[in-house]
Image (cartoon, rainbow, N blue to C red; front, side, top):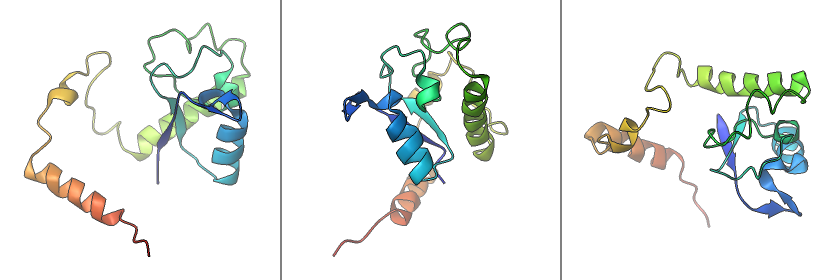
Length: 136
């Protein structure tokens, strides 16, 4: 299944999507039974310190100081634990612990690595073929 989704800059029914409790906890996690984690688009959190309480798990790019040790002190410990569990569960399910790639912030090499090998093209073609939906 899907390990993560990204919320965006827009508002949904007047509330920014990355802090929209009805959208993230109600629709996504409640109605759709999504078990993964929610990350913000870059700088899409808008500085709400209680974003974890409303369903956001990871603030991107992560170096803006919005979700840090001091900002989560006032949150319910259960909300922080649930958020961490969702992130780590997705990482372990995807076996990122077995396939280390880089240690932030020194992760520039994946963006400049060669991604057009025959193996990569075959993988992309298989993924595209498996996800095609026919419409009448």
